[in-house]
Length: 273
Image (cartoon, rainbow, N blue to C red):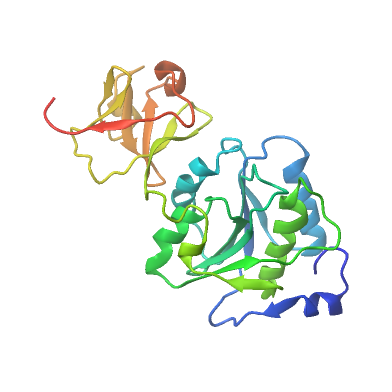
């Protein structure tokens, strides 16, 4: 049920989804740049009140702040291999309270809710090979804050979808209708720096060969299969557990060693060395 609404009002402001075409999600995964503080806790507490027993997992809360352009390319790898019928509530939303639209996406058996600011665009393009559906959700609660749509707008939408209900009014969209649809499929930048200082990138793997190097300033980083195959303290690149190109250093922080942070540009060097 939507916050502040009776069961009858909720029925009138949502449409039943066809379970055969749009299987309802069984859990919610939070993917945000909220970081430490009250925000994730409020999402989890509100979800517990609206849908007791529904699993709500804080999958990632330290995405680079205000950078949906980077988070967009991490998202496809982040969800790879995760349980189907999961709803990913995705919030990296520097335009909160502005004119940007709100999206609900079903890609295969998974769902995604978030702002229309490019955050979901690479995912939409990659999932074009499977059955998907996309809506702009124009429903708004009677009372909501201008600055915390994750709690007041996106989460109630997500809860409705787990009940097999699509909030109304809404409008069906094509993939080309959303912001960022014409952006490249890959991103030649650092997307995310993890707890160990490893640098997850959006570099395309396709042009790389086993002897390819990643150019970082005047350094050329070679490939290693995993950490123990590189000398201690040495930086290298490898294909990480998400299927993305990552830069790391054996028992060192690659971000400090190389002077890199989220958003920094990278290039491949392919050929004879």
